[in-house]
Amino acid sequence: MKNIKVRATSAIVLLLILIPCFLITYFAKVPGKVIGLAFFMVFSSWATYEVISHNKLHQSFNIIFAVLVSITWFFPFDWFKTTSINPNAFWETKTTGFNHDFLILTIKHLLFFGKDEISGLNALSISTIFIFSTIIFLFNARKYESTIEFFKEYIICLFALLFIPIFSKALYIYNVANLYIFFAIFLIPIIADTSAYFGGMLLGHKIIKRGFAPHISPKKTWEGAIIGYLFAALFVFIAMYLGKMTNNSQFIVLANYKQLIVAIILLPAVSQIGDLSFSLIKRKMNIKDFSNLIPGHGGLMDRFDSVSFVTLSLSLIFLIK
Image (cartoon, rainbow, N blue to C red; front, side, top):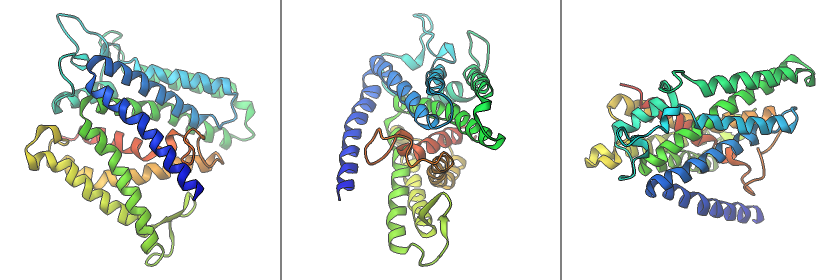
């Protein structure tokens, strides 16, 4: 009972911090975008540090890594370039939110295919993070008793250094662009997890005796996973098709039926995969939670594991023509 109260109190406090920040980022125009940028940058650095801080490296190296990932937010340079003659639409002061077409262009340029107009380089932040992290790990290779242990921690660290900042940047873009899409991203894992929990309580192990992922998350059942998937798929259909049904541009998420079909099939699955992936990382690092930042819940990536996979998967779905 005490643990439930702690978890509930922590959840309320977390929401009281996050929701105002999300609303300010969207409604406060340029000042809000600046505040949101700072918030999500700090979020990505701290979340990355939580995941990598359990390795064998000296903590000074992990702090360097956490600072290093902030460069993801500064490339491409032309993201911030704006003049009176050629204003940058992302930092437009007169309106809030983006239309659907500009959102897709922003996702492509800032996350995937954009070439920096100033430096003329692609993926400069990713290359820098990869090179520096590899050098640091090779410098500390003697700390590891075996090659397997070395590559285990190296791969986990590299994944965190690249994945978490890119996911955080994508989430920031959605926050600025469209609150409907932004909160839908959060609701998919919530619905999947909640329905899976109650489905597992009611039907768990009654039809399929073997656990869903016994070596990663022993409490998960196939029945719960299937029920969670189905309810999340139903929600994805309603949320992603609502704009077409109501003919309201504010609720339009996907551009065509190919994207809708892929979203219905993929997003509920990646929500569960995200949970299992970060659980696997914790297993490999022999920890229960990434940190104690949120009492009763763990660290940021203990709460945002599924959201991270849904966010980047939706970004990829947007590219389907």
